Length: 457
Image (cartoon, rainbow, N blue to C red; front, side, top):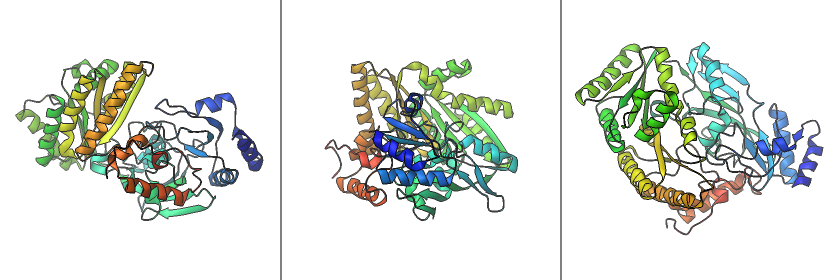
């Protein structure tokens, strides 16, 4: 492959491939900490050089691994088996903004927060808001079909992709509407084609937004209270769950001791027209009064931002609890969340694991985190037992293995828990149609399936 890199460099001419040790080290892992083998990194600055890179890499037989910010939790951008990492970080332009149509077209490397900052002065926003929005790219968000706290009201990335300009492994540039191939590329983790740009649906900024945090008892009780609220006519924009252990951790990190109560919490936001928000907020506050629940409501924009900082500080606060974070983002029907939280807590306790649970319970997406140390062989063995048991229980409850982190290299060994052999073969055939030689992000998703023999029939 190193000879392939040299040949590709010769073919690309003025498009430089960086092969220094600092590049090969820095671009061979993502947020999982899993490492691959990066043979070189290239930074295209527009469509033409990106097309040349993809086309010529295919001709010399060099695997291509697209990379946004490397914030993924499934190893989706890790260069498994060696190959060329193509970073989109120098492709971050806004290509078009259409106020009348409420659309924007951006290059794949633009950071989610950069797009939000561009839109706000124009009176618009882009709804998908993953916790990593300050660093993750739109291309990466599309590849993983990212969601975020606002997903309960506004939905995930898939709802906002109108069309994609993408490149085949042969170097053909195609613009596809979402009703076509773009629907397959969204959530495909870079295994079917290379995304250059996206035309996105955007929304007018809401007139007002109110944020609240509610003390809601233990984990299963909190889920039951959330279900009661929703059945009463309460329609929040954001409905988040933070278990007691996670809240204690983030409270210490943020020095917000008023939230370290030993209870789980529900995090809410309501947005829209002022009168509508007032009505919805009164439903929430009345429920809390009737059930004796403590509630903290942001009184102004500064306090609202403080509550959001608390929510977004969860991941960095957990990082202090262990060298290794086993991070799984399962997705379940709303009616199964209480049972899932009970199972998670019981099984983690049985296996003596340090477990933290939070997530977007409004759309059934739970983030289950085991804080451990990969150097502790026995503890890691128990962690892997927990992961398989978790996935099997989630599927039994009608859920799936991931809500927004993707499959990558961390979950492909478990796909046979969810899919039959025929379903897996169908996905492999789809991959072969787009990328018969498996040069695009090989070893990921369905192209890297490892069967354990326990799948459905």
